[in-house]
Length: 242
Image (cartoon, rainbow, N blue to C red):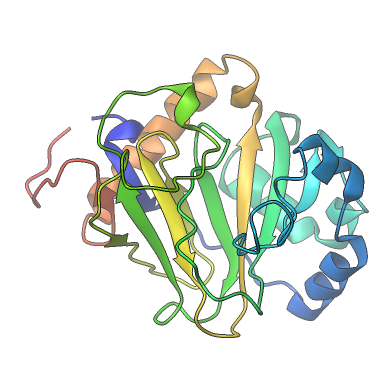
């Protein structure tokens, strides 16, 4: 088994530490939109612009090659969490991207994959884990191709109709999702806070073999531990073996 056999799993790591959420909300409002960084994405990540109001998040970079707007000074708990609990050195963190839910947005089935290859995530806060949902649809092929990254799936020609709901075990949980072999979306049905974070590492731009091996082991072992909450590309039973 490798991490690409897994569509989603909580990770066997400590939850994100509690931080001052009001302070974080104020920081997000003060820096969004980060115009130059959004321009580099071809403006694809500006909610309501190119996606006809489908994009269910704001996109805010805490780090993009370097720390932005004093994030590392204002929220050292988050930096220490990634460096110490995840074991990813600061110099290996390529980007740290915050995805605060758009309170005004109702889910419209925005099926997509993200750009990052390792799919490392955590929640700073996921207030309503029952009504608001993280959902997945598997691809129809298990070919690992970079063209599957950073896509919006407008039809069902490449993904299954069946929808799988992620099992959330903690309001501040770390987790993994597969950007190669699944599309994901969210159901934003309440005004409760949800802030997810993408950890992009230098594996995105080079062969960090040791980091990849470490993440492989973490994801596989976590999926085996949390198999009742995890989603596998193949519908394996409780008798999963490596």
